[in-house]
Image (cartoon, rainbow, N blue to C red; front, side, top):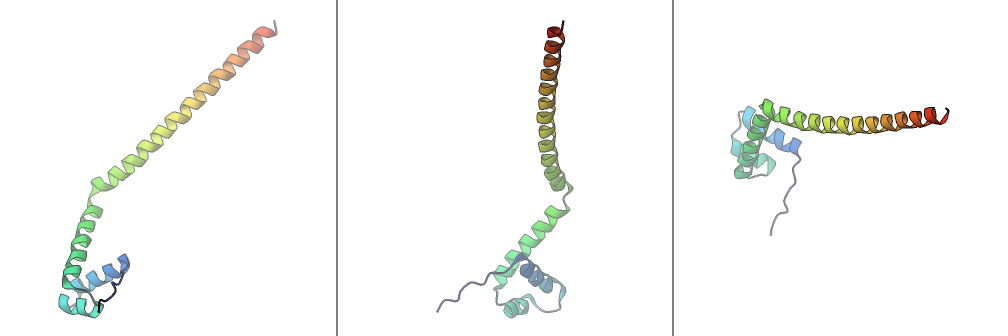
Amino acid sequence: MLQSRRKFTSQQKFEIIKEGLLSDAKVSEVCRRHGISTVLYYEWQKKFFNGALEGLNPKTNRSRNGIKEQQQQERIKQLESVIVEITEENLSFKKKLGNSGH
C-alpha cells in the first residue's frame, strides 16, 4: 500500500532543519520523528543554506532594488513627457488666444 505524500510548509521545513542542526538528536531520529527520509532532510538543508547565502549577498538586494528603481525612473520619464506635451499645448492655446484678441 502506497502512503500519500505529506506536504510541508516552508515554516515546517525550517523548523525540522533547525531541529536537526541545533538539537542533540541525530538527523535520523529527527527524520523518523517527522516521518521524512534523511535524503529529503538533506535536500531541504541544502536549499536552506543556499537560500541563506542568497539572503546574505548584498548584490541580490541591489539587483532587486535596481530593477525597481529603473522601473520608477522610466515611469518618471513618461510622466515628464506628458507634462511637456501638456505645457506645449497650453502655450500654443495662449498664443492663439493672444493673437485672436488683436
